[in-house]
Amino acid sequence: MAAASRAIAERTPLVDLILEVRDARIPLSSQFDQLKDQPPSSKRVIVLNKMDLANGAEVKEWMSYMEHQKQICYGVNSHNRDNIKKFLNFLQAHMRQLKKIDYSSSTITMMLVGVPNVGKSALANSLHKVGRVGAAEKGKLKHATVSPLPCETKDISSFKIASNPNVYVLDTPGILPPVINETEICSKLALTGTIRDSLVGEKELAMYFLSMLNSSEEYKKWAELSSAQTGRMLADCEAACASSSDLDMKGKRRYPSDHTQDFIVDDVRRTLYEEASSFQRKLAKSKDCMRLIELQLEALPEAFRVPLEFGDDSFVKVSKKLLNLYRTGRLGHYTLDSVPNHSHLIL
Ligand SMILES: Nc1nc2c(ncn2[C@@H]2O[C@H](COP(=O)(O)OP(=O)(O)OP(=O)(O)O)[C@@H](O)[C@H]2O)c(=O)[nH]1
Image (cartoon, rainbow, N blue to C red; front, top):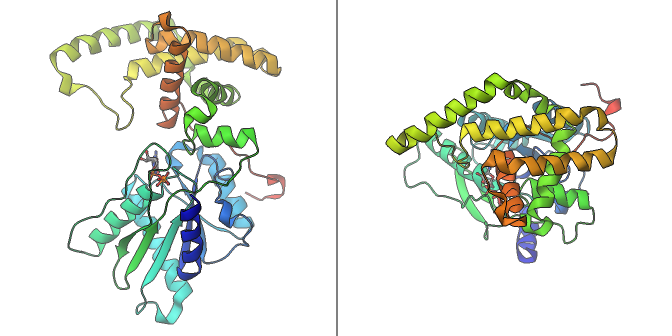
């Protein structure tokens, strides 16, 4: 990381635009340490990526806050082609404005920087794919390594994202600050995948997620799953899925990065809702919150169909499954950082 950090620092004054990629779920905790104390500049855009996983209303508040701070900010979902097209148009318009007269004759370079796993490589790939097709470029597409694990990008690579003028984007390795003193920031970074789960512990992270879920409104949306009738429908659905899987494996619904069946997800949601709603009145006391989390963790193995015979290992397995569902957006949308001093903002 130290070498990559130096390489980024050397290139920073040479590029036309810095795209500081942050995770829209943690717009503050995922800020890039090297740019933390820099004043706002027209040469820097804060890109809030993974918008599809964050709470839309809260991200809007964050964007207004950043605008108020004179920071240029743009929200994207790197997996959404239309969104990437709009972002590319925005970048080109912004560069045109920055370069003014000599825009068409110049070669423009942008650099993606950020902490690990915020989606820099996914964004580089998407911009390259969309831009190259738009510019009718021939030749093979390049591919940056995209992974759910942090720190997979090892080198700086360049991707062409537009022609006339030529625009290149540099993908860089994720960099963390040398020390993170606050435990809460560590938990947020781990929950969103910026640092490895093992550094905090899977069970501890699952508990952190549950505390966030229980203090949000998200689980209340799952009330309808709680009725007895729905329970019967789920059992029927489960039986139907089991028999159809024997006959036709190809027909089963699959998620790109999460293979949990829908009826299991519904059972997990129902379990979390039922435990939380029966505790609702006592949530103000933190001791009760811990007890609720324990109860939820005790109830989840059944919902996930994980046998309890392996003791603590069963809970680690359940925790991993729970984290996986959260990270693919199937347990709601959350923004974990609150907007600072937002009372003075007109939103
Ligand atoms: N849901 C969602 N997932 C995303 C998005 N962008 C990236 N991801 C996922 O986030 C994970 C990390 O993406 P990468 O592109 O490898 O992240 P990175 O910042 O290059 O990571 P490092 O190599 O650690 O620096 C992958 O599993 C991606 O598929 C997005 O907009 N939405």
